[in-house]
Amino acid sequence: MKVSSFRGGIHPEGNKDLTSGKPVEIMPVPEVLYLPLSMHWNKPCDPVVKAGDRVLMGQIIADSENPIPVPIHSPVSGKVLRIEDHEYVTGGKKPAIVIENDYADTPDPSVFPILNWMDMSSDELISIIRSKGIVGMGGAAFPTHYKLASVKGSVDTLIVNAAECEPYLTCDHRLLLEQYAPLIYGI
Image (cartoon, rainbow, N blue to C red; front, top):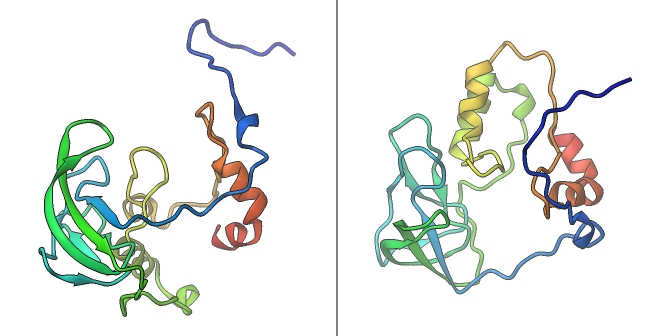
């Protein structure tokens, strides 16, 4: 059987062997965190905290009236030092909330497991997914609630894409090896 292809394109070396055999590591959390108010392609969120506020792990620190963006949560407990323009991964500066980590990891009361999720309606689940800030893991960080709302009631097949197109990435591969059961449960 002949496989069709096309001419051109870029075909970099895979280099997957550099990390495909190495387990996932947990990176240390820094003393100061810079959390951009724009974590996706859409309009930035508005801060709901100010300099001097104490924040808890998982607390919403920025949100938007726009239906597409998701709230931004503090990954640590600590103190808001300032809100300032800061270097951004795509170049230039964007507004960011700067938090000093207190290393106590005190959780916000809103952080708890949702035990009855299987009894909830799709609207309730989509609302929770937005409120928890869940987005796609691709470069666009596309909000998951928006994807789900756009196809609600019309999905009969789920395709799980764990193919990594970047030459050096093996994080999906490692997660499939190391966290198989939680992934299947989540899917």
